[in-house]
Image 1: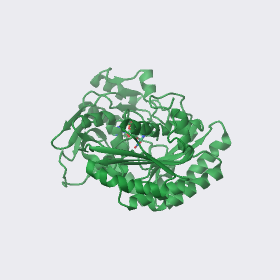
Image 2: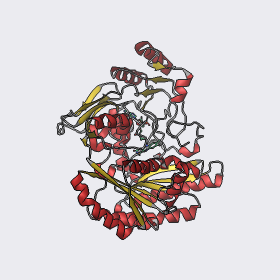
Image 3: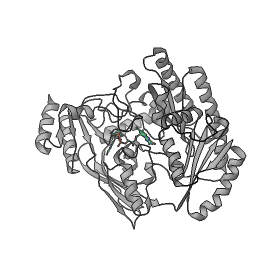
Image 4: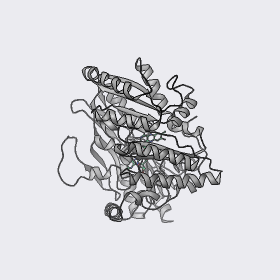
Length: 477
Ligand SMILES: Cc1cc2nc3c(=O)[nH]c(=O)nc-3n(C[C@H](O)[C@H](O)[C@H](O)COP(=O)(O)OP(=O)(O)OC[C@H]3O[C@@H](n4cnc5c(N)ncnc54)[C@H](O)[C@@H]3O)c2cc1C
């Protein structure tokens, strides 16, 4: 009742082209990539940042839940409006400006990561965070999830590039955390508190991000190994020599087979069915000249086979196969529990052996791929939803995975965040005092609990909810 009154007031203030209440728009904003649906009452698509303040001020007054949305590519259910209310869709705030002299970009929250990368590349700069969803996902969403991607090991993740944030507190007050300077030590650092806060502490409308010069040269090497343990051991040997590949992607046997079947392309002719590491060096011509022999010697010592990409086109084709991995898993089951755990390098061998055990004990396919230079691995527990025994086994396998990751000194999420999907495991990672501190911060910044309520701290077993049968633009097939 009160929410409907608030919605009517909002329509009067912002107009019905910005505030949409039609069924189709509300339905489309009711879910993200997790495909769990909760209908909102309205979807707001501001063209001006000031409208964001208006929305939050009204929402706060009438206690309307607000879920901020970039493009809804999150797999964690964090953009699904579990409590209904309003969805604040920022895709129309999408301007990008490159400051060539400062090596920074001024970017509105709704710009896609790929559009920022293209604008930077046109001026000789690189924005390294590189989520596979980059053609769709937004900078606002990347900041809210602290997104990573393949470049994490050498360059870092979104957090490492954010210089300043502009946006609104849940109360509707405008704030700027930091300025467009590389140094800023004035006061508490709430910029970093917002990064990774999954739209629960504030709404980002714009950011200033750091860029790095485009590397003059790149070199891609494909390597195969006899088994997963050997591949992981070999990667550690490479890092021990202080080689920092720009990308170092691992695909286990199952992932290779899936990617091959999805793309119709053999990743490494003659090596089918073997785990691979695909790595890329990036830097000046001189740096690469020095590093190439070191890496080739390493491959000669450790790999079953290796081959350098002949040219950029061949390298890009290999990376395209890697980017297909996530969707390709659906060759093995109609459902997946998609994890983005992190394991410390010193425990790579133990983790590879644990995964083999997990496969054997569960009888499930668990294709695993990911970023070996930062330990962030995508473990995909595949199952058939209609098969009750398989579904139960998938959930207990997930529990075992999360417990093991934490016991090995790792993290339950390296880049996707908690949202709904990882909420059952938050307390495995954090002590009660840590969760209490997080909740206190939430209460301090969002006293009425309107911003993205029902996430992170409340346990939601996402696998129990029905999944929509919809095809999203970034889905496989
Ligand atoms: C095929 C595929 C591949 C992927 N690959 C990667 C990968 O390699 N690396 C990686 O890190 N992730 C990856 N992801 C996950 C996802 O793309 C990222 O989490 C991304 O950052 C989400 O961006 P988005 O704009 O879609 O945000 P949404 O999904 O719309 O929202 C995600 C969260 O951010 C909040 N949010 C969004 N915008 C704002 C804002 N302006 N202010 C405050 N909060 C906001 C939302 O409330 C929500 O909590 C992948 C997803 C898919 C589907």
